[in-house]
Amino acid sequence: MSTKKLIFLLMFFFVLAGCQAPNSGNQIAFSRLTDEYWQIWTMQPNGKGLQQHTCSTSDKRYPYWNRDNNKLYYRTNNNEAFILDLISSEENRIFSDLGMIGSIAVSPDGTQLLLVRFRTELRDSTDLWIVSINGKIRKRLTMDAGMQYDPCWSPDGNRIVYVSGTGYQANELYIMDTDGKNKKKLTDDKALELLPSFSPDGNKIAYTSDLSGNYDIWIMNADGTNPKQITHHPGSDTRPIWSQDGSQLVFVSDRGGRQQLWMMNINGNNARQLTFKSPSIDPVWKF
Image 1 (tube, rainbow, N blue to C red):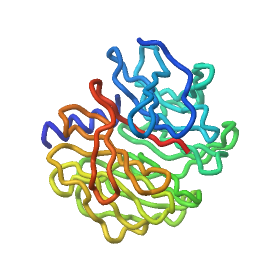
Image 2 (image 1 turned 45 degrees about the horizontal axis):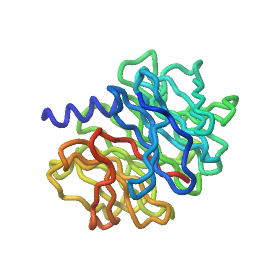
Image 3 (image 1 turned 135 degrees about the horizontal axis):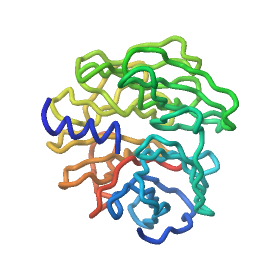
């Protein structure tokens, strides 16, 4: 494995200014390296209106908007799950009894949370769980070997696309119903597929793949057919997230020398940089 790929995988699996109240309107939340720690920030889709929302001395990764859009979930570098109130700036740990949490995604109707949970009895192993918003109802969806991660809800809330893998070049995209049934493998190319994201209409999935020998953004139909590479830059392009109208993708790229947030049309044209200076990753669009 190349050094570049190893650094990306390590960052992927495991990574003090004044905090402010949130802006109104459409926003993107993300993690930004701030005074040596990844902190939660928001900005407008044009890159303006930057605001920092966390200040504590721990890394905060993978933010995800609550459905009321005034709260954000995230996880820390030691895999503890938190919820952040953007109005009061209060941060509270959640699901401490579930052990180590890799990420959280909120269901389209706002009633359930999709968790990546580390298995304590096995090394390098995670499963997907669905937990009610109050934490009382819990269901394990996967019991497969290796890592199950990067889950994304379909817009209708009926399906989940995710990554399943047992090692490098054995990480493929799968889709299943939200009860864990009707599992289907979407990719089978011995490349590394990561970070799938449903389009707003549920018909397409954007994702990251190194099938071309470099990390690029791809788009395929939601049934796995017609995969198409849409970025061809020598830099690493990862984590595509659809705009609300489905016309744009915000993504992470180091094509400028550092990992920053960029935006482009869904055909790969008109790429423009949104963040500068400090590295920025983990974008998520406000609902």
